[in-house]
Length: 421
Image (cartoon, rainbow, N blue to C red):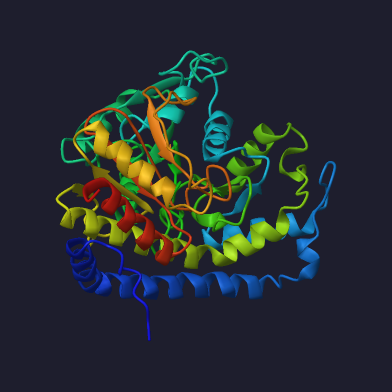
């Protein structure tokens, strides 16, 4: 006898869940095939690089001659089809890796151009167009320019071409794959490939940087396959599989990785320094599990989209739309149900389920933010979490889920607590 996990749900909700489960099954099967493809690529790289027990022995102090660190960076570079990589616990976050990359490629008098419109809140703080912080790009005399996206969420290629041709101080063109706190769709790799070609045809001299956070393993291809010069991602997210406790990564062209290494540590030593302490086992196991765990998160977000749409909420992307990251947006139109739904996700998390999220001003953000994150690793958004600024259209950005089963249970109960109690 199989006991149903839906037995305590209201009858109407249980019926909706059954309907959604049947509806999305073809999409779930499609994700399983993608996981198999990506997992095979990772496994082949572990075998080709002869990963062994000795590679899990971490270094201390300066971290010189760390063979395990060098090998995992080679695996990253091979997977993303780039010259080299920095995979380091010394990166405090994905934003730290992005900041390191952008500062390393630019000098006073240069201009950073965002092709995908104004970036999200924490990067605005790095640039110096939000907040009142020291050490921003603005402080260093590095300019910023963007042409906002069109109303349909696509790149404004006409104005972008004018900007790239007119401003020769532009040295870096940045592309943000995920939506951040915007209402636009995240950009698929196919769309990013088009952007890269567009920029290179006009300005082959600039470096193209990709903010890939939330994107790794969400498709069978990555932006670096199509000529991106440098790309950043967080190890708290997809590539760490909920195992890596700290860090981020950069992959890209050899000279740019060397420059980022010098910015992360010191000129001269560069990427040759940086002890791995007790992190190497996490790095290897996390990357090995990344394809599977990202697949579980994708399934959870497909379910979230379908169930929330069935409940009459506005969702993006739709459950059957192409997916390029692990983020699902659900818009509530007003703050009260948004906060209640977020609280319910917290209540059905493995950690701190007894906590009620309260909107507050978080460092790096302009508006009050409500956030649910009952994760084993603080800030690990590959684990099920949700957050959003308290501003119209009152959208929650839900992401992650180490297991599809947990995501189904938590999201279903969030719907239950918000609309049936």
